[in-house]
Image 1: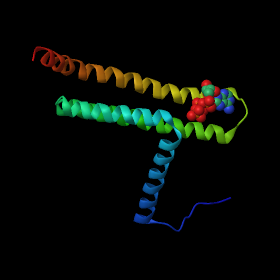
Image 2: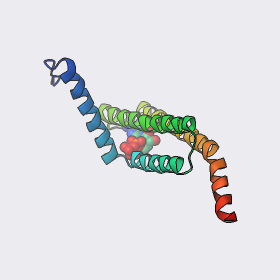
Image 3: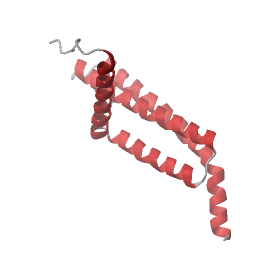
Image 4: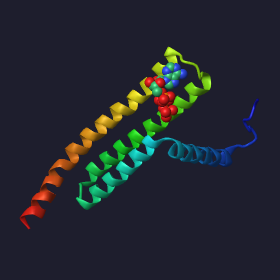
Length: 134
Ligand SMILES: Nc1ncnc2c1ncn2[C@@H]1O[C@H](COP(=O)(O)OP(=O)(O)OP(=O)(O)O)[C@@H](O)[C@H]1O
């Protein structure tokens, strides 16, 4: 079955692609608990960054890291869907594809935790020292 509408061109095509991407994001948010957890953590991290007056460049690094983790989560979801589309039976290649995609998210998440600790530990210690010595 050919479903692609080749008549849509130019800016309309661009806005359609944008709409499909938003639909993909909504679908991933509705179906994948891990993405919701990562978004909640990201939200908390951004609030803490503003409350603790983290410097601008470090905030940029946090935004980049959050974007990387969430984008990889979305790619992981896409890989899972493609594998499920190709086969519902057990296949070692299906397992490898899903596990390698999951490993990409794991690596990015570990890096995000390391970056978070390196950026937040000093301001957090300073904040608690200030609270305790008040
Ligand atoms: N068709 C398959 N053949 C072999 N192994 C699979 C297959 N589908 C999933 N697996 C493996 O089974 C384990 C659990 O996969 P499962 O399908 O429960 O979760 P997932 O697809 O990774 O994520 P989700 O639960 O969000 O769909 C993983 O190690 C995955 O690689």
